[in-house]
Length: 394
Length: 199
Image (cartoon, rainbow over all chains, first blue to last red; front, top):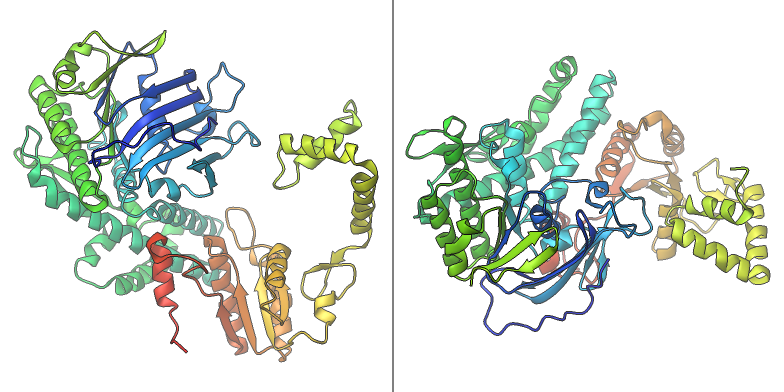
C-alpha cells in the first residue's frame, strides 16, 4: 500500500472542529490505478457522469473506519481489474490528536480475496478497532433510500455502525453474537441435544446480546435528545427501539435482563429447532422511525420524506459524535440531491456548514451544488480523465 | 504437480505453512538454497528427526519424542494442578512464561458446531479420567477469550463439576503495561469484575 508513515501535511493552525481527510491516496482501488486528492477541511463536492468513480472515492474514505465500507464489499471487489498491484487506500486525517496516517489494503502475501491489512502511522494494527479510535464516519447512499421502509435488518446494521463510533468494541460484540447464534442454530438443526453445550452458547448470547441492546438503546436516546436541534427543513424524526431486551433494560438491571434472556433462550430451544430459526434476541429488534408531522411510520411516508428522515438521523449522529468525541465525524453523502427538493438541499448545505463537518458529496449536476461551493465547499470533477480540482465554479 | 521444479515444489509446500504466503515462501527457499551447508541440510535433518520421532503424548496431548512426555514424567512438576489448553502452541506459550509449574492437558481444539468440532473430537474423556483419579485438586482453564474458547471453557467446567475439583480460569482485564484510557469497554468491565483485594 502507499506509504503512510510520514505526514507531508503540515498541522493546520486553528483548532479543528471536525475530522478531516487532508490527503487521500488510492492504488489499484476499484476504477483507480493511481489517484491522489489533496484537500482542506472544507466540505468536498465531487461531480461527474455516472460510472466515473465518485462513489469509489467515498467508499475509500469509508474504509478508514471499522467495517466493510459503504458498499460492504469483499476484498476481491475492491481490486482494480486493470492492475496487478494489491489495492490500497491511504489517508492523512486530521483528528483531535493531530494528523494521523491511516492505511488499509490487500495483504500482498494473502489471496486476492483475503483479509485487509491496516496501518496507523505506518505501524500495522491487527484490529479494526484501532481505526475506530481515530475515525468516525456516517454515510447516506442511494441503496439506503428504502432503508426505513424495508425489513429491520438494515436499520439494525445502521444502528450498530453508528454505535461503533462511540464504542469501537461494539462491532466485535455483534460479530460474536451472530456467530454464537449460528452455532446454537446449527446444534438445534442437527438435533444435538447437548444441554451443556447449548447452555454455554446461550450464556455467551445473553451476555453479548444484552450489551448490544444496551449500546443501541443508549445511542437512540442520545440521537433523540439532540433531534430538536435540527431546526431546518428536516423532520425531527421520532426514534424508538423495539425489542424485548431493549425494553426490559428500561425497568430492570442489565444482569437481571441477562438472566431472563438466558432462560428464554433455553425455553425456546424446541420451538427454534422446529422452525429452524432463532426466535428471540436483539437480532430481532427494530428501530421504528416516525415522522413527527405526518404522525406515521417512516415506511408509510414518501421516498422524499424517508430520505429527509434519514438525513435528520445522520445530522443528529453528527451532533452526538461532536459532543462525545470533541470533533464532528466525516459525513459521506452519495448522490444526495436525489429525492431532496431545492429547499431541503439548501437546508442540508446550511446544516453541514454550521456543523463545520467535512462532508463529501457526490452528484452528476454541478449546478445543484453551486450554492454550497459558493459557501466554501471544494469542487472536484471526476471523469474519464481522472480527478480535477474544478475551477468552473470560481 | 509432476511438472513442478524442485524449487517450485518446495515453495508451494512452504507457502502452506501458517504465517507464510507465496512471497515469503519464495524468500525462504532462496535463503535455504544460498545457505545450503549452514541451514538447508541441518533443516532437512531436523525435519526428518521430527517426522520420525515426535509423537503425541498419550497422557496430556503434548508433542515430544517420548510418550509420556518430559512434562508428564518430570518429578519436579506440581501434580495437583492441571492446566487445560486448546493447543500445544498455548502450552509452549505458558512454558515460556515460567509462571506455571503444574501439569497440562491439551484439548486439541475448541467446540464449534459450525466447523463440526464436537465434544467427542476433543480430549475430554481423558481429561475427566485424569481428574477422576483424585490426585488433581485444581483445574485451570487457559482457553482463549473467543466465543469458541469460552464456550469450551463453560462446557469443560460443567463436565468437571460432578468430580468436585476446583475449576478456575485465567483472569481477563487490564494487560501488563496497559493504560485504562485505551481499554475497550468489554475489557474494562472484565477487569472490574475480576478485581482483587490489594495485598
